[in-house]
Image (cartoon, rainbow, N blue to C red):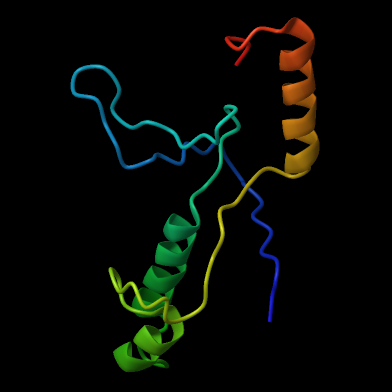
Length: 110
């Protein structure tokens, strides 16, 4: 079964990559290969798991949470899968940016 999750931001968001560069950048943002920002699926799944653990603790056991989400670091891909969250019309954005870059014939466009 496949489903779509729509995220509507109520304020500004800087979804960091988890990497930092000492003295230069505190938290780097995740970008795709042409510079479009996205939220990693791993981060979304972690937030959903945290909600289940924190707010639903009286309704759902840790065993159920592990069955639903899998265990952190488990490479068996147990639980449901979450893909990266890209902006609406992501494919059109990619196409437009790529076409503009090709028109300028300048790889430093982005």
